[in-house]
Image (tube, helix red, strand yellow):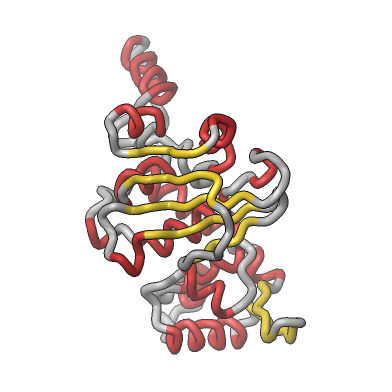
Length: 247
C-alpha cells in the first residue's frame, strides 16, 4: 500500500481503508463471509488475484488474520478490523442518502444482487421444511437468467444452477426492478401492479414472500435530495417555523 507521507492519523487510516476495493472487502468480512470464494462472490468484478493481494495486505497491517478451518483457509477480522464496522456502515448510509444509484446498466449485477438478497432472507418467515424459490430475470442472458434460493427454515443456499428440488415459488421480474425493490426505492406492490413483478406459487408462500425476502440494510434510509415521508414532513415543518439549523 502506498502511503501519504504524513503522520496525521487520518492519513494513516486512509492508507489502510481507502485502497481500491478494500472497503468492499471489509464489508464482506463484516457481513460474515470467511472463505475466499464467498468473499469473491461479494466483489464479483474484482479479480481473484487482486482479492488475494488485498487480503495479504490486510493481514500485514493487522486488520485480517488467516486461519485454517475445516473447509480450508478462513479470513477473520481482528479487533482492529472489527473497529471498521461503524465506518463501513456510515459510508453506506451516506451513499444511500446522498449518492443514490440511478440503476444504470453498469451499476446492476445479478450475481451481487442475489448474494446480497441471500443475506437478507428471514428463513423462519416461510413454513418449516425445504422450500426452493426460483427467480427468472427476463432481461438477463441465458447463463444468468435463473437463480434459486433454497430455504430450510434456518439457512438459505444460493444456487446459480437448478439444485433439483421442487420449486415452491416462482418469481418473474427484471434486474432493475428487483434491485429497486431490494434497495427500498420501489414498493413490491407497486412493481406487481405495474406488471414488472410476478409471483406464482401457493397463496401462503406468495403472501409471506415479501417478509421472507427482507430488504437491504440501507433500504429505510431516505434520499436526502428527494425527501419523502417523515423527512419531507420535517423539512416542511422547518420551513413553516423558520427553524435555523446550526452549521
